[in-house]
Image (cartoon, rainbow, N blue to C red; front, side, top):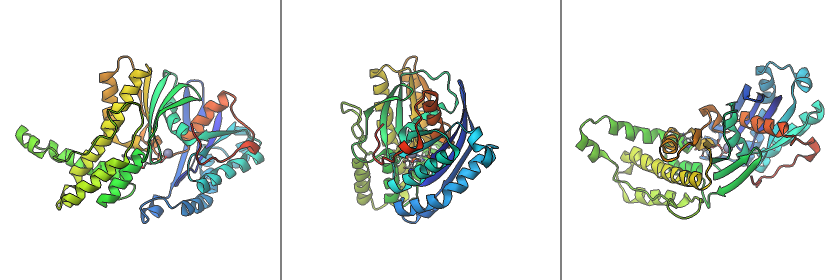
Length: 357
Ligand code: KG4
Ligand code: ZN
């Protein structure tokens, strides 16, 4: 089955063609037109600008995805089996561009459509490649700029949100911390790069006492780490960072140190709650998903924790290129919907910017 995926929920105009089989999802093309350079100067995504850019980009990226997958435009109705599109959650004016494009193509090419929840798409990034050995139920830590969720996946299409953020998402916290320290946009990769400098400078000292001296004196809170339940809250962490920076006249020379502790505070909370949830729900697999899943330390530390603290539980994470927003993950979610006869007619497609899983 060949599926065209379309994703325009935020600031990436993305299209992809995947080929789904009973054991494997092959990505035939994966095109992303990023608007990062445009939004950089505002320090965040400007919704109206994003929507206008999507309008300009969407048809060229659909054409590019077809071309890269070796499908001529006039062959598309015959070669494709369905169109998958993100219908929410996200920026309403951005979502509309993808959804209207999907509707038009589905009408002209007489194809069924698979409406996909963006968060579900991130989860399905884990199913790209060989998916036959993935065991369910699974707990998925879904961390992005808009979401921090612990999701229990019992079967394909059967999701239960067991933990959510009460305020800022993890990626949003990274972005705000980067803004406070003025180190760049988007914030996640900027904070991670600064944090790595601190770890490397630490590592270079072979004398143990020197290592000890260099260890960070900064100690930010680990919000809600030990509180009951699986909800998260990261806005207090950002405020704690703000107050510590204000008190420290020398903070500009200690950015790697602050970044390292900020990143570690988020990782401690995410990993701690994920392991506790995996135990409680007796899952067979722990997965990581979303843009923050690109964070190398989080990838490493969650994997280690699963291996060391859970018996007979597998760990799965997407390849780096499928962590941040892309359409291959949307097409993959669409494949499982098509396989389970959950596609619909283009007339039924509706955008829902607050769509729940
Ligand atoms: O999934 P995504 O592309 O968009 C949303 O659905 O929100 O996630 C983007 C978020 C941004 O907040 C960005 O700062 C964060 O993912 N991010 C990272 C890293 N790469 C991207 N956060 C931490 N470390 C990274 N390496
Ligand atoms: Zn996303």
